[in-house]
Figure 1 (cartoon, helix red, strand yellow):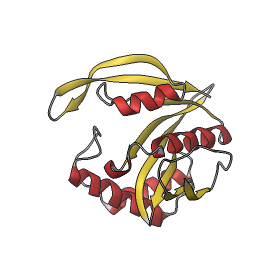
Figure 2 (cartoon, one colour):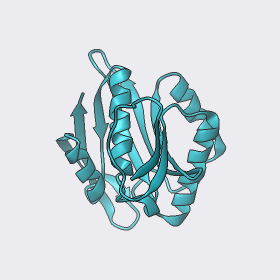
Figure 3 (cartoon, helix red, strand yellow):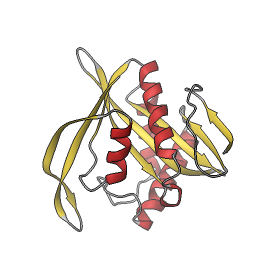
Length: 186
């Protein structure tokens, strides 16, 4: 049961989170909120709980400045899950503009202690809603082949497999592994 759920952009979302949690979703972040995201990323990098990402190096506050600038000019979209003033999940979309369609590349991360509670699903649904409102018609995602939870989330939300990038991601432990290319047409 959700005791307090705030949607800044997509109030029609009626999904549920298991457990009695008070979660706030922020879809229009301020610089302060993006600085909190930096702390979230760095905390989870240190704990090695973010899974496969492009860097293992800590992020500086300068990243928040860059992200905020990209958000303000429409190159990135965010949905941030907050529990008790702590960032527990983030989805973001890097927007690209084409001749026919606008689209973007999706990433979602959930704090290890909050996985399996439906937060990723709500972050994705918020992102889809924001994309519709901004005229973005294509969402792409490229999870690694061993990211079963992300693959299940994408397939549950009608993403289709478009291809496979062979040995496209260098995993520190496994070496080169495949990325699965998913697309959702909105």
